Image (spheres, rainbow, N blue to C red):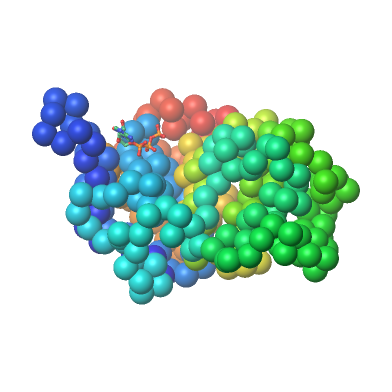
Length: 261
Ligand SMILES: Nc1ncnc2c1ncn2[C@@H]1O[C@H](COP(=O)(O)OP(=O)(O)OP(=O)(O)O)[C@@H](O)[C@H]1O
């Protein structure tokens, strides 16, 4: 279970530029929950993910993962439990390393062993099987540098790397926003499969309202650093885009535009 309790994040406190990014935010995520996070620009969504990853240290509050208080753990220590896929496909993979080396690095995370050890025949066979499931032919290019892949292929690799060691929480930060619609669909389908197969506790930020409705079993709407709406598994399947706009009281141009896209 993931718990955030009374988490406050304020940038530039006490100055004219003060920004309250998270406002005494409480959140509990059950294990295996696939939670979608929506909200307007500046609502605090990325800050929420940054707090969970340890990239932003809150002014107050606690972050607890499966009973362990990780509030003071830096990013690298949390990396064994927390995986993240970013919007930019170039961020999650090392371009000069081959596909299999990238995967081996991901497999090594949090363990004291060398790259060569992680590139053993058993792991290689596992990487090949996992890559083959995407249907992109990447399993036949395992020695190719990741930098030679398309953005969509790199994002698939980043997703596979993020999920490889079954993290305690998977953070998806608009991970399909930079992809063309067809590739975005492929990555979303892969996301759904991986999350379901491994029962990964997942938080996914999206500005795509169709994705917000279609994926996940819980939906959070953030506004001004708070959770404005929290829709659970019983209610979410029945939600429509019109419901969302009405219930959020938000005839917001951005949301309406993306809903109709
Ligand atoms: N590193 C930072 N330094 C200063 N202010 C920041 C920083 N990160 C976020 N903020 C501010 O905190 C608030 C929340 O930002 P955040 O990026 O979490 O919102 P968001 O919901 O992810 O927005 P978007 O949808 O545009 O990505 C905003 O007012 C933003 O300007």
